[in-house]
Image 1 (cartoon, one colour):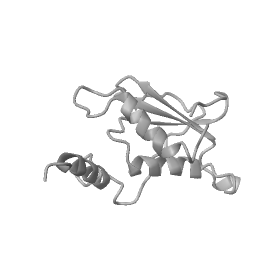
Image 2: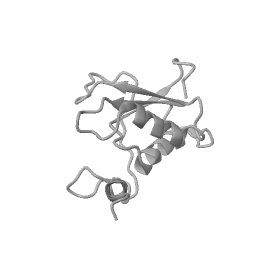
Image 3: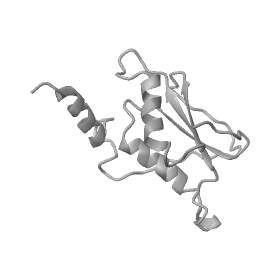
Amino acid sequence: MKIKDWSRPTALFLGRFQPWHSGHRAIVDQIFYKNDLTTPTERRTNRASQLVIMVRSPSATDPHTFEQIKEMIVNDINLAYPHAYEVMEVPNITNIFFGRSIGFEMERIYLSDDLEPVENTTTTRVEKQHFNKDFWAGRQ
């Protein structure tokens, strides 16, 4: 779970992850897939061989603490990507700025419709299912 060599090319994934779900996992899989060494060099889009997952500090209204989110992430991806990622808490980042191009890319990863946010919302179908299960659990 700890990256051992900070000099290696590294990707960054930033979010709240409230909660961590299959859409987030699909993005992690795509990040590592885009650096698949079996893909010809000219078609590879990601030079990174490791990943830093930055969890935005939870707000007072978020249901999960950083420690809970980190545990969800580790439980989900550790078997597939041991020693290739690190999870860290960061402040409540609201903007990311950069000046001239200095050797990194910003890239949007598009997922299947069930993992993308529902139109006119910021919630994915997977998140709706998760929250619905949590809400109704034990209330029958």
